[in-house]
Image 1 (cartoon, rainbow, N blue to C red):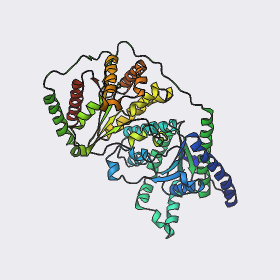
Image 2: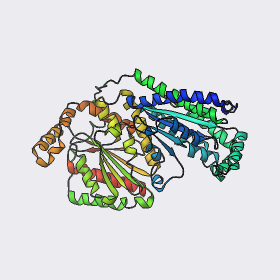
Image 3: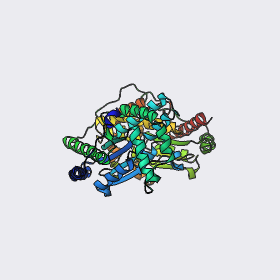
Image 4: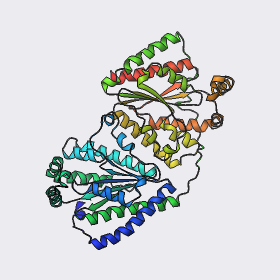
Amino acid sequence: MFESAEIGRSVEKKEYEKSVETLRARILTAQLGLARTGLNLVIVVGGVEGSGKTDVARRMLGWMDARGLHVESFTDHSDEEEERPRYWRYWRTLPGAGHGAILVGSWYTKPIVRRAFKEIGEGDFDRALDRVIAFETMLVREKTVLVKLWLHLSKKAQKRRFKELEADPDTAWRVTKQDWAFAKKYDRFRDVCERALAKTGVAEAPWTLVDAADWRWRNLAAGGAVADALERALAETAKRAPKPHLDPAKPPKLSVLSRLDLSRSFKGDYDKKLDKQQTRVALLSRRLRKEGRSLICAFEGVDAAGKGGAIRRLLNALDVRNARVMTVAAPTDEELAHPYLWRFWRQLPRVGKTTIYDRSWYGRVLVERVEGFAAPGDWQRAYAEISSFEEELAEAGVIVCKFWLQISQHEQLKRFKERGKTPYKQYKITEDDWRNRDKWDAYQAAALEMIEKTSTPDAPWTLVEGEDKRWARIKVVESVADRLEQELG
């Protein structure tokens, strides 16, 4: 693969200066189109040490409108990053619509380095690359123009570049001991990188391989790749006309939801039982920090099914200094300008903390699906994206509890009317609630498919019979206690 980037291409000064004028005009014109189309730009600059990754980032920043760009360099993890899933630091840097980010180093760096030094095996390396492919594919489908540049130098060219830099007092600092350590493993790195590029150079996110021996050629090749990608994306976007897609699906007569025994009610001393389960949660949740874990509880369900009441009982069992409730409503303009999972990634709890979501990332396959806010292709691919997200949470030590609260249509109507009559509950009932009631079948069908496709060993769904509020609240708190006990021992 890398042989084509070792030919030794070069560009004369006059030709370079002339080409830069044309290239800058193309890039700036295309960059202006980002905001108009709702696209964003992410440029990943990777490659051999000494190939000029930082120089290329600086050149792109100079050629483009810097007001809509930021540059990120990923070095050692901070304490805050260490307490989050690995991709958290990358999600935080994603630009909004109309903006761009230039990443020097990226999600490729750690797997490549670890594989080159044999810290991970072939299987783990392939799994890391699979995650990269899934992440990048999701970005592209969420309106990201992803440009991946790999700057290459031959072994001889790299060694020559290091010596040239070290010979000049003004640039000697740019060559570190780590650079030379990596250079000693050049052949090993070459094999690992070749495998990484071959596997992740998929149609949605291809690599541009750049011969970096001559800086002028390198800059033009990098800039040309950015211009081509922007122009291509703008042309494709112009062809697509967004259309509403209402989902007419109906649930089957027999399903996991229809088979729930909604007549279940709590018998016995409710306060005593609730206190016992809350005490279990309280004691177990205090061990999260010691065990390097955190907790997420996501609540979904039929309107008026009792999510708020269950959440309050769960919150009463937790140390409020280490817990918070996130109520998920319609996305803000800032959130709409990013991939739909962005607003959830940035709110993930640190070690020892708990976040409770009153509605969650499942809005993509529920409300957005039923109301036609997401095209079929978007909500259909979301099942795999959400499962991957939850898998990353579990791998990072996050305990994920998910609850679906179910009531009958008759009980829902009864609660709607009660809310309308009770002054302190009237804020809970809106026109949307009444309108959604007319789409009961569509929401039930969406919920069934969601439960079927996203209930995994790492993040199983707990179905809660919500007709009797006391039964539902105890079941939720007890389920969290059981899950904590299972995970923490």
